[in-house]
Image 1 (cartoon, rainbow, N blue to C red):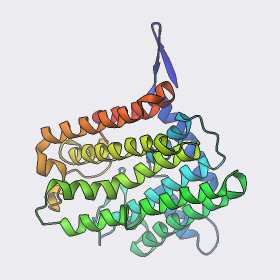
Image 2: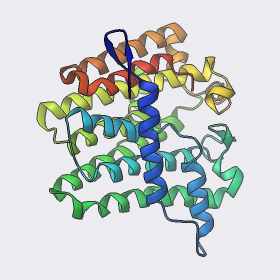
Image 3: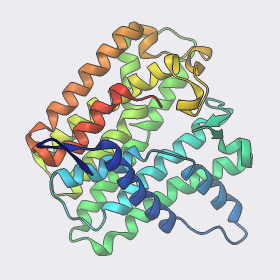
Image 4: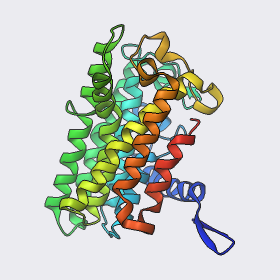
Amino acid sequence: MTKLTGDIMAFDLKCYLAEQKAVVDEALDRYLPPISGLESKVVEAARYSLFAGGKRIRPILCMAAHDAVSGSSDALLPVACALEMIHTYSLIHDDLPAMDDDNYRRGKPTNHKVFGEGVAILAGDLLLTYAFELMASAAPSVENPTMLLNVMRIIAEAAGFRGMIGGQMIDLECENRKVDLSTVEEMHRKKTGALLTASVKVGALLGGADGDELKRFEDYGYHFGLAFQITDDLLDIVGNFKEMGKKPGSDLEKNKMTYPALLGVDGSREAAEMHVKKAVEAISPYGDTAEPLKAIAEYLLQRRG
C-alpha cells in the first residue's frame, strides 16, 4: 500500500486501489446469486455489467472514509458492495436507447446490446433491489441496527428522486436547451455527486463519525462529486475510446449541457482544481488516516478514463 522513497514513506495510490478493488470484487462475486435456475439469464446479465471492469470508486471511497475514522463495522463490506450494485444498475439503465443510447461501456458492448432491452432493464432492477437486501442482511451482525437503517436511508435518498434519479431527469430536460451554470451544477450534484457523497458519508458513519465530523466527510463528497463530473465532462472532449472504454464526444452529439460547454476547457479545469482543493481541505484534520481519500481526490486531475 505504500512505497519507500528515500527516508519518506510515500502513499502508493495505484497499489491501494488495486488491493481494495480485489477485496470488493471477491465480495461481490460471493454476495451476488450464482447463475442458475429459470431466472439465470437476468443474473448472468447483472454479473456481466457488474464485472465489466469497473474501478469500484464508490465502495473504495466508503471503505477509505470508514478507515479514516478508524472504524470496525461488520456491515462495511455489504454496504460498500451495495453501493457498487446501485451504481452499476444506473449505468445499465443510462445506456438504454430511451436514455443515452450508448453501445459501449468500459470498452465492452452495453448490457442491452448483449442481452436485449428487456433483460437489461431487469438486470438493473435486480442490482438495485438486491443492494438493499444485502445491506439489510447485515443487520444481525451490527451493534446498532438503527444506525444501519440510517445508512440505508442515506443511500436510498442519494439514489432516488432527490439524488441520482432527479439528476437524470434534469439531464433529460436540459437536452437541446441552453441552461445556466447553477442548473448544470445542480444536475451533476444529484446525478453523479449524490451517490459519491453518500459513499463517503456512510463509510464515515459506519466508522463512528457523527456531528461536525460527519459533515467534513459530506463536504469532501460534495466537492469530490463535482470534480469527478467536471473531469468526466472534459474526458468527453479530450479523451479517447481506448482509455475511456466508450466513444468520446457523445455529450456534444446529444447537445448536453456540460461544464466545458459553459466554462470552456480551461475554465472547467480550474473549477475541477478548486473542488479537489476543497475536498482535500475538508478531511485534512485526519492526517495520514485520510491519505487514501486525499490521493483519490488529487488523482481526478490526472484521470484518463
